[in-house]
Amino acid sequence: MNRLIEYMLPPAKSTMAGETDALFYFINVTSFILLFGITVAIIYFAWKYRRKSEDDVTPVISHNNKLEITWSVIPLILVIIVFGWGYSTYVQKITPPSDAYEVRVVGKSWLWEFHYENGTVSVNELHVPVNRPVKLVMSSDDVIHSFYIPDFRIKQDVLPNRYTSVWFEATEVGESVIFCTEYCGTAHSNMMATTIVQTQDDFETWLESSGGSGEDMEPAERGEMLTQRNACVTCHSTDGTRLVGPSFQGSWGSEVPLESGETVVFDENYVRESILEPNSKVHESYQAVMPSYAGTLDDRQIDAIIEYIKTLQ
Image 1 (tube, rainbow, N blue to C red):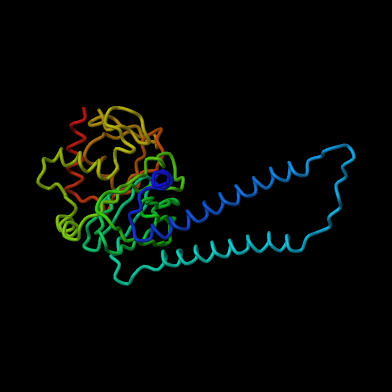
Image 2 (cartoon, helix red, strand yellow):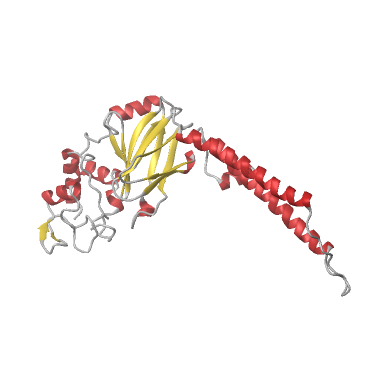
C-alpha cells in the first residue's frame, strides 16, 4: 500500500502536504468504492433480470421514493464533505502566518528570479530555511506563468501587472523541483528551478555570502557559473546548436544581422546592451522574447559573462 501511495504522489515535504494528500486519498478511495459497487450492481441486475423466455414482460415501475432519496442524499453528503474539507485546506493555504519569511518571486520567459529581504537575488534557485513559514509574493514580467512545487503541494498562477502569493513550510532539508505549469512560450518545458531547503544557520550563511557570488573565481569561470545560474543556456547553446536565441559559440567578434536590417559587432557593448535591453537590437530570424536582467546582474557579473563568451570560439 505504501508503495502504491508513493507511486501516486511525490514525497510530502511541507506541513500542508498531509492535509492535501488526505483529501486526495479520500476522493480516490470513495470513487473506487462507488465504482466497484455500481459495477457489481450492474452485473448482478443484468444477470438476475435477464430475459429468460419470450413470454417475459418487464413490469411497469413508476418510482421508488426511498431509492431516489438514497441515491440523492449520499452523493450530496459526499459533495458537502469534499467541499468543506477542500475549503478548509484552501483557507489554510491562502493565510500565511504573520512571522513568515517573505521572498519576492518574478517569473520571466523562461526563468524564475528570487529576491530576498537583504537584497540578494538568485535565479532558478529558491533557498529557504527548514521548519519556518515562507511567503512568496509573485508577479510576471511578461506572460502568465504558474509556480508549482509538487513536493510542497503548492501551485499558484503568476500574473503580469498583479501580485499573487502562496506560502509553505518545508519540513526537511533537501531539494525539490519547481515547474511552470502554464504554457508560456517556446521554452516553457525548460522553465524549471530548484528549491533548496537549508537549516536556519546554513540559510543565513548563504544570504550573507550573497548566494555564493563567485567573486573569488577567475572571470571566465565565474561567467560560466553565472550563465548556468541565470538560465542563459536555456536559450543560448554553447556548442552551436540553434535554440530560442543565437548560440554563444563562435559569436565573439562576428557580425550580427539585426531585424532592422543593420549589422553590429558582437562585442562588449553589444553583449551588455543585449543583457540589459534585450529588445533594442534583436538578432535577425529570432524572436524578441529575452527578459531584461537589469537589476539582476551588476557590471562585474556582466563582465564575467563577457569573458566566458570570449572563450567559446
